[in-house]
Length: 179
Image (cartoon, rainbow, N blue to C red):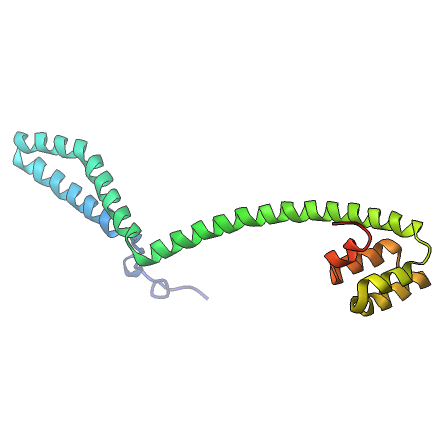
């Protein structure tokens, strides 16, 4: 089969559509102003050529002042202000969180020291269970199951002490160490 001339579209019939790049309205304004001024100065003679040179020199200053004005408008927007306040609060929270993290690490280290001290004190006692029953009172019921697991060997003394410190707290430590 031969292709006829009618089967191929002619070059003139093909239309290529170009999408114009969208510009910022302000930069478009300056471009249009520049083009218009340049065309006007070329047609008007030497006086406007001089004005065109001055315009070119001051265009950067105009753009800078325009950007500054737009920045001020942006910063006066309530949404921008709220965003700025939130970002400042987040920075403060991040700083406080890092401080809390450091403090938590210190507490863990001190807790391990307290556990080892209580463990050595418990080793010197003959009847630990009766001693804890007398000094803890009703709080003994909270630790009773954990103590039984410790006696059975399911958990270590250190884990039992940790349980006592987390569930009862200062009162548990105070029966072994004077606070």
